[in-house]
Image (cartoon, rainbow over all chains, first blue to last red; front, side, top):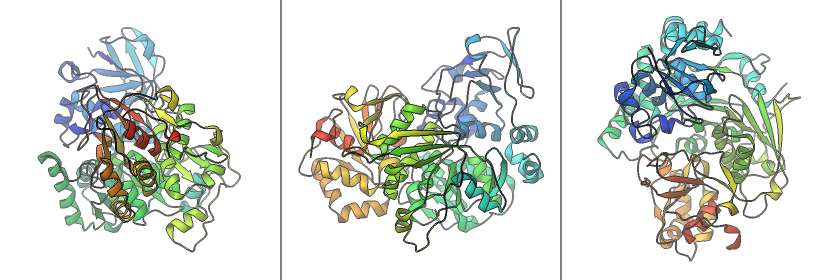
Length: 165
Length: 410
C-alpha cells in the first residue's frame, strides 16, 4: 500500500534538490539526492508508488526540472498539494510525474497514512476517506495521456495541443 | 484591445487574443544555461529533428563559471558539443544569462522570449513577454520555434509618487511581495506602472521584472517608453500600451513612504522593515545577481565603500552581472574601490546566489544578499540564513558587519 510523505508550505526546488546536486542529468542520481537536506531520510525510506502531500506553493523557485525528476526517480507516484508553483507544475506534467491540486486533503492526512490515487479522475482515497482533487486542464491531460511532452510532440506535433486549445 | 500581455499575443498571432485562451505561439528566442541546458539538449535529442534555428537559440555559461568540478565541466561539455554539432553561435561565458539577453540585443518591445530559467521574467522590463520554463518545454521550442501558453490574466501594480533617497526598486518589489505573498501572482502576468516606474531607468525596471517570478508571476511587464528607446539606442517609438485593459486586480503602492525592505529567512515573503532586523550580525555580504548586479547597483555600493573598509568579520563578495558591466565598473574606478575596501571581486556570472560555486555558506552562517532567493539551502548549508536587500543596505551592512540602515551614511 502506498504511503503518504507529508510536507509543509513553500517547498522550494532548492529543498527538493539543492543546487550543488544538480550537476548531473542522471535521474537515479537525482533521486538519491531528493530532499537530501530538507528531509535526509526521504530517499532511503520512500518506496515505489508512495505519494507526497504538500502545502501551498509546492515547487516554488528555480525552473530546474531536476526537481520533479528527482521526486519521480525516488519512486513517488504523484504529488498532491494545496497549490503548485507554475513552472514546477508544468515541468512535472512534462516529464510524466502526476501532480494533483487538492486543498481539503491537507489537514486530513498524516505522514505514513495509506493512500491510493486515480491520477486520471483526481480521486484520492486515504484510509477509506475520499477526496476529490482538481482534474488536469486539457493540455496537461493530453500530455499525461501520451506519457510526456516529448512523447506527445514526437507523435502528434503541435496539432495535439492546438486541437484542445 | 487589452493588457500588455493580450496586446503582445494579439499582434503576434494576428487575431484578437484574450486572457484564459490556450495558444501555440512562435517565439523570438529560446535561452538555456549550463544547468538547464544539458537536460534540454537530452530532451531535444529524443525528438530526433533538426534545430529550429541556430541563430535563435542562446546558450549561456553562468551558473557555474568557470567549471569547479569534473561533473560541472562535463555539463559544460554537453552544451559545447551541442552548440558545435548544431551550429549554435550565440554561446556566451561573460555574465548572467538574463543580463546578456538584454545587452546582446535579443530583447525587443512586443517580443516573446522563453528561457529555461525562472528569472526569464526579467525581459519584461523592455516590454517583451518573457517567461521561465523547464528544460523539456525549451527542448520543444528548440525543435519547433514555438511553445504553448495559457494567456495569463494581469495584476496591475501602480507604484505611486517618487522614490525617496535611499529607497530603491528592490524595496518596492519586496514591499509588493510582502503585500501579495510568495504565490500572489501565480499563473498571472504583472504590469508595473505608476509614476515611480515611469521615472525609472531600464536598469531599475529590470529589477522589478526580475523579482516578479518570486511572487509567482509568469511575466512582469513595463510599458516601453522614452527610457526604453534610449536604452536600446533605437529611433523607433514603440506603440505598445494597454488598451481598455481588464485587470484581475489593481494594486497601489505609495513609494514615498517606503522604508528599506528586508526579506528575512527562510522565505521571500517574510519581509520586514529594516528597523526590525537592524544590528543582525553577518558572516557574508553578496552584491550581484540578475536582481541587482548592474552598473547602477555597483555605483551605489562604490559610493558607500569609497575611502572605507568592510568589516573584517564579514566577507564581502561583489560579482558584476556581465563583462560589459565589469569593464564599465573598471573604467569608473569602482573595482579598485571595492578591492581597496577589502571586498572580493569575482568574475561575472551568477556568483554565490545559488550555492554551487564560490561564496558558499556554512552551517549557522548568516548572509545578506542583493539577490532574489533566500530559501533554506539556497546559498549552501540548509542551516544558514539569508537576508535579501537593496544594494545600499548591502553596502552599509558590509561596512558595519551587521544589518545597517544606509540612510545615516553618506
